[in-house]
Length: 266
Ligand code: NAP
View 1: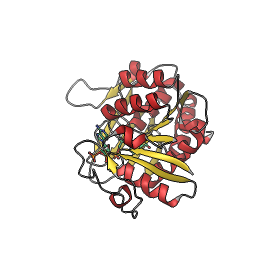
View 2: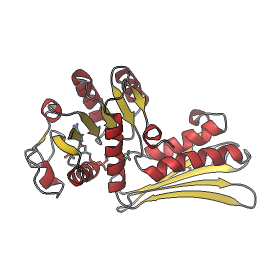
View 3: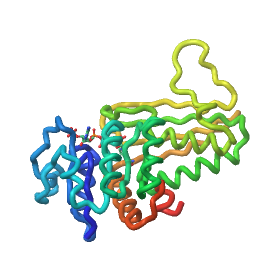
């Protein structure tokens, strides 16, 4: 059995992870972290996930949550991810990070920790999205530069960050395929006058509504035709299964920074 600590256990993704661990034959939940303000503290993590009791109490104590873990999986908030990284680094526990909205400082922290530990970061853990990444890269490279690229993401009303981490990754890939960077060509939302497109821009729009799990549209719009590539997530369990596949893959690796493309070979 591989012991997994779920960091962010009481959240939408954390509860899916507990259910997916319960379904598996080779994984066991060894620790369950939530915030110090969480209404789930002291409760059985399996009950919180509506997966039946697992005899692991939800705690806000990182030492306790990580005590017996072979791997940690983080689906929290960027601030918590930074604290989680410090905690796994001092205990030499490899970590899978699904949290999005990480800024440059936190990415730098991840790179530093990955010099000593295996760390896998993925803004989207689904198999099809990782194939979607390579399709978008191919289309951006193959179509002429006057095919305008626009990226739209749609998520539920509670999502904290916009554009989504997946939308930003799609933009980075498209920009890279056109020999530039998102820093040079990204345009984030448009309103008011003087918002006409500049040549080569990659535009982002974000919808936040209801309980949409996650949709990404990438448009390549030329004169007289538009190619649209779309991915729709219909069940969060797809991300949970992906995160567990990442955890299995990461165990026993050399220190380094890995992504889902390493796990999936796409
Ligand atoms: P959520 O429902 O808001 O859950 C967040 C979790 O983090 C809760 O368990 C929360 O505990 C915990 N938390 C917050 N602050 C904390 C702290 N200081 N210390 C410890 N735990 C803390 O969010 P979600 O929808 O599960 O999403 C979590 C993250 O994963 C987001 O960044 C989201 O964009 C990302 N995500 C990634 C993927 C992917 O495939 N990579 C897929 C879906 C979502 P309490 O609420 O109980 O206090």
